[in-house]
Image (cartoon, rainbow, N blue to C red; front, side, top):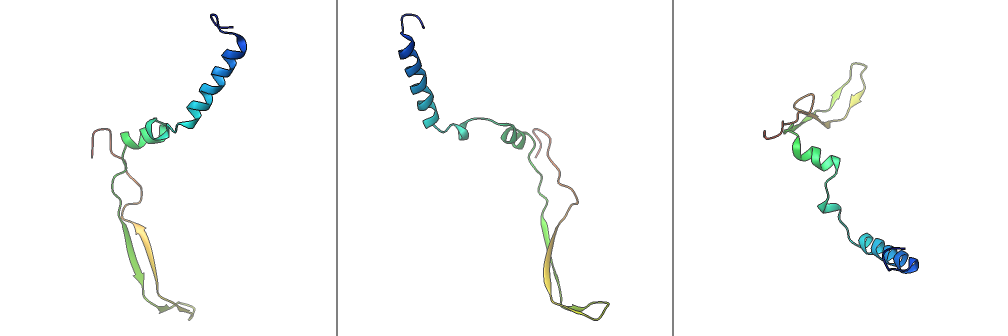
Amino acid sequence: MRQGVPESKSLQSEESMKKELQAYNYNPYTRDVMSETDMLFPMLPNPSLVMYVYPHISHSGVPVPGYATSFKLYETDHYALPGER
C-alpha cells in the first residue's frame, strides 16, 4: 500500500496509467540505435550505373536476348564521419 492509498486503488491507477501510455505512439520521438547511427554516420552517395547488353549470340551458339543490368559505381559503401558531408 502506498501512502494512504488502498492496494486495489494503487493497482487500478497503475493499470490505467499503463493503458494510457500504450495509447500514445512515441516511436517518432524516441531515439534508437539505428536512427542514432544513421544520423551520426550518413552514407555517402554511391550511384548505380545501368548498362544495357544488346542481344547477342553466346559462345555456344545460343541466342541471348537483350537485358539491362545495374551495378554500383564503387565496390563498397562509404560512410561520412560525424560532422562530415
